Amino acid sequence: MEKKFEVNKELINDASSMKLYKYLFGEENDSKTVDFRFIVLDIKNSDEKERIASVFLDVFAVSTLLYIDKRPIVFYSEEQDFEVKNLLWSIIDDFGINMSIFNSGKIMNRESFFTVLSLFEKYIARKNYQYYGVSDLILEIVKEDIKELSKYR
Image (tube, rainbow, N blue to C red; front, side, top):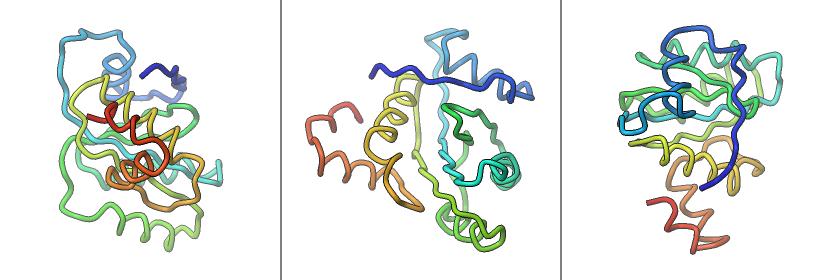
């Protein structure tokens, strides 16, 4: 799936973020396989983006952050013992902010990442939602264009 994504390199501030950036955007070996999950944070108040992203980084044991197309995206490697949806509700209540998230599920390679992110952009990003997961993405694709579902495999 072809779509160009823009990364804010100025906000890459640690080695793990730089390593992930190089892997995703082609500066590392293409044959390498890395399992990960990601959460797209859509925070309405731009002043809160960094603060809320850092909360997610603190909560997820092994995680890193990239700003892609001006959105903070938290990458993590392990399935969590808690519902990400419940974390979202806690953050909304505690910080009193308007935000939403998309939780990707397990991603096996670079191509899958860009496919899921592109499908998210096309089918979910402009919708008014608070939490969307993979099943919600699939339902949106089925509702709008079932032929696109083959890209998700």
